[in-house]
Image 1: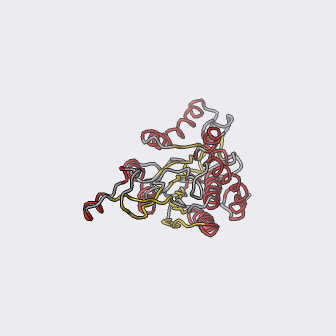
Image 2 (image 1 turned 60 degrees about the vertical axis):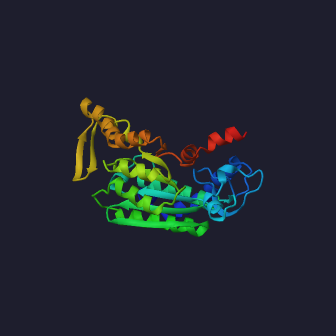
Image 3 (image 1 turned 90 degrees about the vertical axis):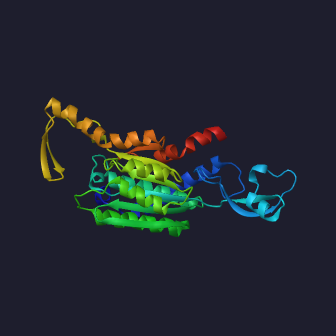
Length: 306
């Protein structure tokens, strides 16, 4: 039962086998690039290597005008393909994530999906890092490569879950986005794992600045009970101020229930839409592979490659 309400390291380690299939799929749809793989994330794609004297046939768009002006002879820039990317997980550990009526809490599902992404990123040859935000939590894992980089993130997910367990206050999304902007380098893929309930007014300008140099997407955690009221009866629920008795026999209460959850995440969804950012919904009873394939566009690329 503990692994339904608490993040367990063994569960996150087990995601490695599933991640191998996800990483292989990403490499198959990438095509035959000279790099380790053609990144499925937006970025520069190439790094500046050096400048040399212009030769007939060189792309004039790659002229190095500074060296040309200094030497008096035309020079062009040479580039090498980037060998790896950075992926940054931003994990919501606020109290609203400790809710779930199907198999597990949203907080546990978010950690499982983030672990799957961490393993797939490491197995694809990229760097993986993470930021955790919630009450009493201001932690990060700088992007690192290989199994060691993935393990650092997994251990952090478990630790962050324990630190925020039982807390009542929430940390706004804007603070997490500001931290991601400081940690994420140009071209970094930033994936938010959140239910969207913590979206504040300052989040949109922070997201706009982050999206200027990073590729931002979101996995939105959800539970079936957030969309449909339970059968008519009286239920004891745990609220911010303690236990609350709610009578779902009343029609007004039943109608208001899903509307309240829509309002809680409505601002976050609208913000993503205005910024034209990718997102996918992950239910607490689902497995995360399909959601990540959809978010990263792997299914669509497979069809195009075929």
